[in-house]
Length: 303
Image 1 (tube, rainbow, N blue to C red):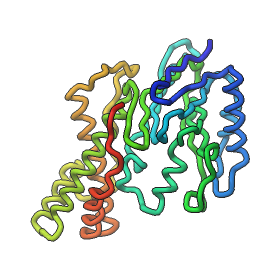
Image 2 (image 1 turned 30 degrees about the horizontal axis):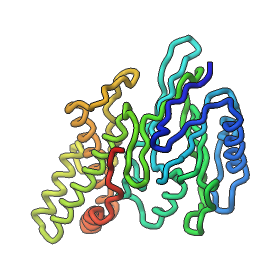
Image 3 (image 1 turned 90 degrees about the horizontal axis):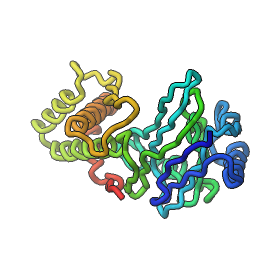
C-alpha cells in the first residue's frame, strides 16, 4: 500500500513520498552526504545508513521550502503491525536546549547547534520510522566554529515494527518562532509552557539579586515547584502527561491538559535550576538564571 503523506506544504514543509524518481534522487544525495562526511562533520553512528537504504516505503523526504530554517519537528507514523492491528508511533521535540529554548545552552555551542540541529531553507531530510537523517551540507558547508571537534552524530530514534501506512507532520517550529500544524502531540503547548516558566524564573532570579530574603524565597519556591522532598536535584525528571490513545485529541487544548503541561514544565525546569545550584553555587546560579531574560530566544507564534 502506498504511503500516505500529510505535510504542511502551505507553510513550506513538503513531504515527498517513496516511489518517485524525485524521492530516489533526493535520498541518494542524503545517503552520499552521510556516507562521505565533510571535514568537520560528525560521524554517523550505528546502522543508520543501512536503515535508510532499505527502500521499503518506510520513509519520506522532507523538503524545507520556507524562507526560515526549521528548528523542530513533531510527526506521527500510522502503522499496521504484523498481527494486523493499526497503531501509531510518534516523535515530539520536547523542550531541551535549542535555538527555540536557549536558556541552558552554552554560548560557545549556540552557532554550532543552529547549524547541525535545524533544517535550513532549501535543505532536506529523510524521515524514517527510526528517526530523521540528513544535514545542512546540501545548502552550505559548516564554518570553522560550526564543525565537530569530537564525539559522534546520530539523529535516529527507536522505531516500531510494522507496515507504515501514513506519515503526518503534526507540528513544525521555524527558527523565527513560527509554528504550524495540527498539534495533536501538543508540542506547541509544551514549548510555550517551558518558555514561560524559564522567563518567569529568570525575572524572579533577577529580582532576588542583592536581597537575602528574596533569594531565600526564590530557592524555597524552586524546591517547592520541583516536587523534591529535599534539595537533592539528582531525582529523575517527572514523566510528561500521558497522551490519549491514538492521539485523537481535540484541536483546542482543555484547561486541565494545559495545567498538566505547565506544571510538568515548571517541575522539570525547577529541578534543573536546583541541579545548577549544586554545581555552581547560589550566586552563580542566580546570575545565570537572571541572564535568561536577556536571551529569550524567538517569540513563539502560530502561523
